[in-house]
Amino acid sequence: MNAQPTSSPAAASSPASSAPSSAPSSAPPSAPPGAPPGALPDFLAPVFAQYPLPVVSAEGVWLRTRDGGRVLDLYGGHAVAALGYGHPLWTRALTEQARSLSFQSNAVPMEVRARAARRLIRFSGLDFNSVFFVNSGAEANENALKMAFTITRRTHVAAIEHSFHGRTAAAGAVTWGAASKWYGFPRTPFDVSFIARRDTAAIAQQVSDHTAAVIVEPVQGVGGAFDLGAPFLEALRARCEQVGALLIFDEVQCGMGRVGEPFAAKLYGVQPDMITSAKALGAGFPCAALLMSPRVSAALKLDALGTTFGGGPMACAVIEAVIEAIESEHLLEHVRSLSALIRSRCLVGPVVAHQGAGLLVGLRTSRPAKQIHAALLERGILAGTSADPGILRLLPPYVLEAAHVELLRDALLDIGA
Image (cartoon, rainbow, N blue to C red; front, side):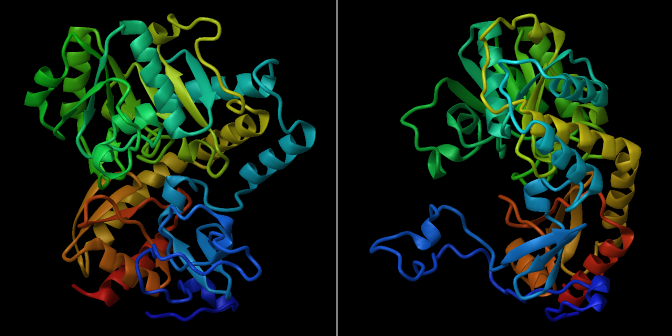
């Protein structure tokens, strides 16, 4: 395959890139010319490892690099670009709202905010009756945990091994491995314990009458596109009911249609007390939401929660547009179809197994996934990795087509076992 960068129309039939061949580089480039002594490169905080992929624009499922190369995006900016790039409904909603009213806070009522909340509750198909709009998945998780503590007056949270819930104080506290890697705070704000994945026998020991909440990603993202499965989630629900704890589904990565249903809770038939959503919720515009059941909503009081930018008019217009696109273009069915196609067609070359759900796909590889990732990038395909060194993670836009899956298959065959 080894396609070279091109800006010609022929590039539409096969991916091409500037042929970067390395994993993300953690070595910062030199400071820009004329910068003062000691200036950081480009004046940006040097905290991100980055691929040598200078993206300047995108359309559909294709990224375009500075030198005119095209790269097939099967990672979607960490599962954000659910509608791909330049989707007409998304673009029109954002443009029109920006022209009419770009921002007002929650100090004033807005119909666009109320419409987005109603639309999101209806789209979920679950037993929720209120929405609190915020800005990020971590912020949604912080507020979900806060509500659990407010309701139960308890001091313990159970999470799941290999989980990721965000980098803020509370969200980081329930993230597996954060304490030894990047947490940074002197102590966690509450007691935390972790349950092994799919270990239903361990639930009773870790979830007790001291537990305020259990927080769980039904399909783990950073943990390797790992599907926890209905039996485990049902056991968590049952134990929470036994001891009076609240069940929080963190669907920041796996929700908003990514698993082929509105939320993974719908896929597995398990009703949580709260769902947190972000990423695909705005499909590129920063926004997030906390969906609450009647039990949780009953505990809300004036000033119990707050945000400046959450629920802004542009965010809410985009949320409406994302749901409209998913429903009107039948993207849930499309996600299920493309997921099945990837699993049937891409078990080739270095791929020996698959896991996950919908278009949160984990391809297990016969050698380190970062090597396969680099080889795909050389062939003009951007995928992702995970905390599991043997899993190549795919989080493509929902508008992916069968022809794109064949490009991935061809690249995997070219890489070889």
